[in-house]
Length: 264
Ligand code: SF4
Image (cartoon, rainbow, N blue to C red; front, top):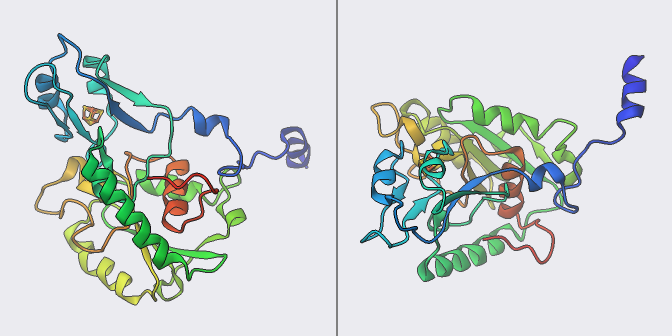
């Protein structure tokens, strides 16, 4: 019986995201962003020390560097060594509809690519009904992304309230959620799973490993992300991404973000 009194004492803990603000959601540091280069900040030296090669230093000391969030594992080294230029951004809404959209600061070409991807995805998911079924495939993950995916089914995130259900069969799935770096042994199973899904189908790559291979690529065992195996529609960076980031990616993919929040 103690769970009854504990439940009454705690009340409802389920998040109302995305309909209402969520304190935990708003304080999550989900990505690293780049500001103007600061005099004395050695961007080239910091770029050389980034463990995944996510930073490209610009020409000259004052040029703004570029950072590929699809390669970033959020280790924080650049924020520590160049705090005027690199900083954590307080939001888990980091999913993007185009791979180019993960590079900051954005360029005009990036904005055009994102607009085109948004229109294409909106057209394809129009036929999806009120509930969406998700098939998750671990394509060579270290296990961390799976903890965050599993949390979506717990009482805090409870994705069933949004009509999102996980299914064991690709035949019943609308959305393919892929984690892991795309290890050689998982290339065929992943491809077979995608082929077995009915149209319309969308693919969400979850985590830096799935997007670019992360720390473990390139290697003899990894193809450096899953985009060469399946056509990715939405990219969710993070190592691992927060459950809120994964949920944001799913909602972005199926066009279910609240009106006025179209996402990038
Ligand atoms: S936080 Fe990301 S961009 Fe910065 S050094 Fe670490 S991996 Fe590289």
